[in-house]
Image 1 (cartoon, rainbow, N blue to C red):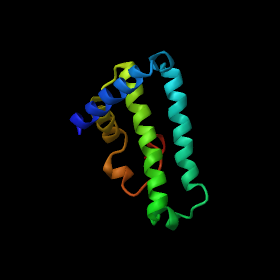
Image 2: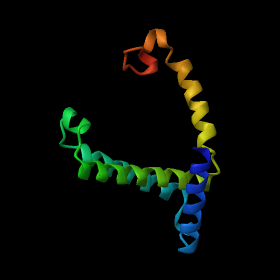
Image 3: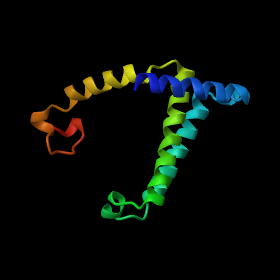
Image 4: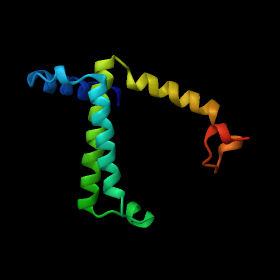
Length: 117
């Protein structure tokens, strides 16, 4: 996965460079684009029932997958601009979540860590 992520990062960097888009790819702009794409993903599910969201037809699944790809690509581009290793920081976040959400108090419980006893 790490190699795949690095390849995507390099491909995005080249894509942006060839179009002289680095000037537009500030962390602020990229975070706003990322939020906009997340909103577009939400739109795909807006009027679906729980069951419909779990049993999408192929056309709907394609639309959802393309929105997810947009989110991933903006996130990778933003990480590149900010020089953040997403794999490394993700492992750190999972380790932190192990501490915040111990199995004994969080299993089967959707409460935020601050509400767990």
